[in-house]
Length: 190
Image (tube, rainbow, N blue to C red; front, side, top):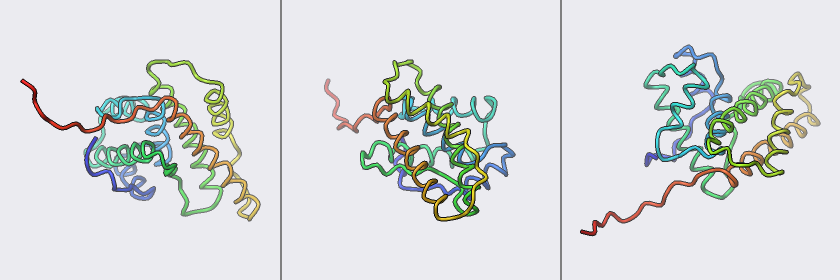
């Protein structure tokens, strides 16, 4: 994992890079896949996530270097959020427009998370009842009607659903995610 993991990638920044690369996916879908891979247990210390990401999001084709670097920054920041143990995970959603737009990005994030999780769980470790239930709920959330009113009640309901999605991802990581190995002193014993 790279050392520069404090950088954040914004939805707008990633959206711009995806448009430039003519990749027909949203930032929420990209982040959902990345988080799914991490939470499914993919090795976070090598670049295996990159190949899995390309397979899911770009039919196995390579990505432009600028987009690849931005996704690496997003991956590293996401790993840090999960391993911190401080529940700092933040979903990358389109929050600059209407509540319907934000809800749409949550459904996209949820669906992409499940795809990433399925690929990340290469060991096919048996899912606990809680994880099975959480993934089932994410499947239902990914199918929600996103044409919603922009009022206080809808906002409150959306916040509850998005918090549930966030906590479900954290639950998946706690059961399947791989934490990076601590950096050891490089003393050679000969």
